[in-house]
Length: 291
Image (cartoon, rainbow, N blue to C red):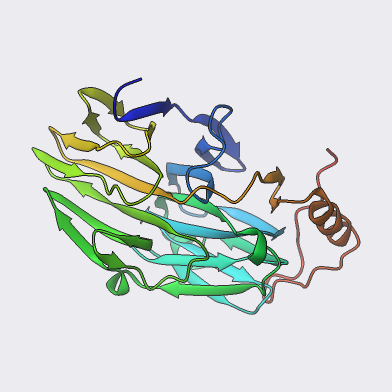
């Protein structure tokens, strides 16, 4: 591709109920970048008064979910008893481990007013030794995240370590995950401390090695090669990556594992009603897919 770029991914569009997403990972030629095994760009979606999202209770294993919003609000509820609205710039980090159930819905006040929802949801695969860790949930307000101002970029360090700073979000393997804006005329050197790195353009267009990366595209970078991101006009980007995963991962529906037996066990447990209920959202759930 170029000295800096290994691959450019143009995400596939998927409809998830009332919301359209652009899915960059997993991709046929690149399943993961560092521990990031799933990367969905949600919206921007405009909802009229009375409308919103209603993702009914569903299970996860073997991963951590990370939700980061630019606009709108989502109410998270889970089987541990947490109920947490997430708003722009905050981080909701949910460690599924051996199993958790959660729902994601538009809150009543936001639903009544009409709103725009825009954000990124990422799944981070847990290392083999932590796949069956105890489930947990953490909320980090935007004020708690380290801010990085470098080369005309203004970024929040969502998780991991980069540019000499470390996020308060608990992670399970070496990684970095940042989001923010590049001012017009900016030039940002991408951290070189990790083997696997990617740049995703949320809006605008950036240049890497004189190659344009447009809105909705992910550029996967070559290991060990310096890379600079240029922006002629203000653009919003996400930077992600880390150490390679310790082996392949299987994904079936919302379940991630290094061993098919763990997925089969979770499938049967969900089918049998063995997972705990989402507190405050007990009445509905997403049935186990037939295939």
